[in-house]
Every structure is written in structure tokens, then in C-alpha cells.
Length: 359
Image 1 (cartoon, rainbow, N blue to C red):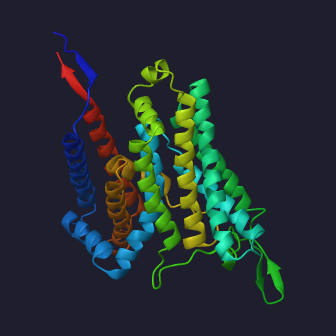
Image 2: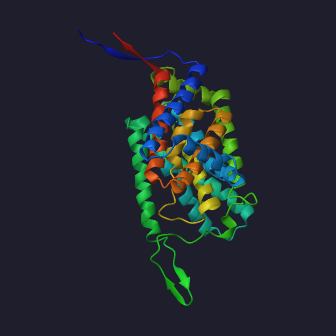
Image 3: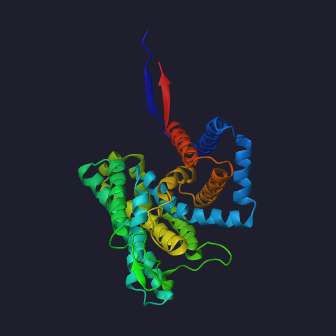
């Protein structure tokens, strides 16, 4: 007797089903992660309690959760948009880096400008650089049918290693100690004061980027739900063949979506450089481009859902750093924790789109 297994696409999943699937996915992820913590002889309930109390129950923890939320919200707003189009942008980390690199060049070149003029220019150039790095895989997909997972990821590695070359070479800081000037340290100099973003007093929250992130999530939602372009994006995401038959330009829709997605990631890079780190080091990237994939799937394009999801995930990152130190867990465990969440979230989304038939 042969058993046939068929995967059939659902006509449409209700919002209730999608929400329940995401809640169940997170619950299963936490349950699976608990087994990992038990292997290290750590009580999972104690770990989760520590994450919550250190991320959300203190003023410092709340502020740091918002700091982590800012780049995540920018990245995931753009990713939610392109994912809705059926375009799998896995290279937001590279687009974030492109924006940061453009901001660094602008900051050191136009340092004579006052902050009121320079800071908007930094965000503009960061958006354009991220958008440019996003356009390339969109065109390759639309014109040559190149797999976007591969192209976006490879473009990230291309830029990453070029970035490493720059900070180990042309951009490497020359340190002055007394009368001696020497190099050898793989980092750049600190960006000029005029290009550093203002912070909320007593915190590391760079409020200009926070405002941009919240506005971006609202504008993406408005674009998708209230404009003709948003309608075309929804149609392309549901059935690209039908969209082409109706005369909709796949190249236009995907390119514009990637301009927005890459540009928002680029703005996140500007905020990370000019608001937090202030210089480049080999460890500049914090994985926001990859973590944003998780929050984009969880939050969708709804701005309220995105803000809440990214704030909670930002707290998870803050709490993860705490448990790594307090419970002496290797960093790989925290990374595995994030990976487990991504796996179950994507699995849950798959089963909301498709059903398995056994005959």
C-alpha cells in the first residue's frame, strides 16, 4: 500500500488562524529552547524570568529594549513589505551595512556642516545606499530569474568583506599617544560630533531614528492598504503570473519594494553608526538584518503589531545578553535560541499557507 502525501495551497487563511499559528509557533519555540537550557543544567523558567525582569522591569532594561527595537523595526517594516510580495530578501544585513558606510563617508566629508543640516543628509544618503544595494537582486530576479535568497545573501558577504578590508586598511584609525602616531587597530576614528545623533537624556535612545522607524512602519501599512501600488504589490504576492497577465509590471513592483526595504535597512545602519557605536569595528554588525526576518514574520505589515513584536524581541536580545553572562552560557546558545524561534515561526507560517493531505 502506497501512502501519498500532497501539499496543497490554502485559498486563504483567516486572521485568527494566522495569529493562533504565530502564538503556537512562539510557544513551541520556547518549549524547544527549554530543552537546550536543561542540557546546560539551567532552569528554563528561571532563565525566562531573568530575561523578562532585566529587559522590561528596570528603567535601563526598558531603554535598552527600545534601543534594540529601533533597527529591528526599520528592517522588519521593509522585510514585511517584500515578503508580502513573495520576494525573500535575506540580505537586509548587507543593506544596513551599506547605509552605515554611506553615512560614515558623508560624516567625515561634510563634517563642517551644522547638525541640523548634516543629520538629514546622513539619513538620506543612508537610505539611498541601502536602496541601491536592494535594487540589484530585484533586477536580477525580474530580468534573469536569479534566486533572490542567493543573490541577497551573496551581496551581503561581498559588502561585508569589502568593509573588513576598509577598516583594516584605508579607514583604519591612526592613534596618537604623546608625540607618536601609530596604527594596527582594526577600527575607524570616531565620527565628528556634528554627525552624532541626539539621545534621550540618561539613555542610549537616538530619538530621531526612533521617530523615523515608527513613521516608516505606519507609511508601509498605508502604502499597502490605501494606494494603487499597494494593491499591485498584494496581487503580485498572491499570484505573480496573474499579475503579469493583468498587465502589472513585476519589475516595477519588486524594484520599488526592494528600494523601500533596502532603504529602511540603510537608515537602520545610519542610526546604529551615528547613534550608538560612533565608529566602525570588525564587530559593528549586530545581526539586526537577520533578526528582522523573525519580527517581520511575526508582526506582518500592521504597525502596532510590528512595534510590539520588535519591542518584545528587542527585550529578548537584552535579556539574552544578561543570561549569557549571569548563567555563563556560550553565545552559541543565545544564537541557537534565536534560530529556534525563526524555525518555528517560518514553519507556522508555512502551515497557514499550505495544508498536508495524506491519501
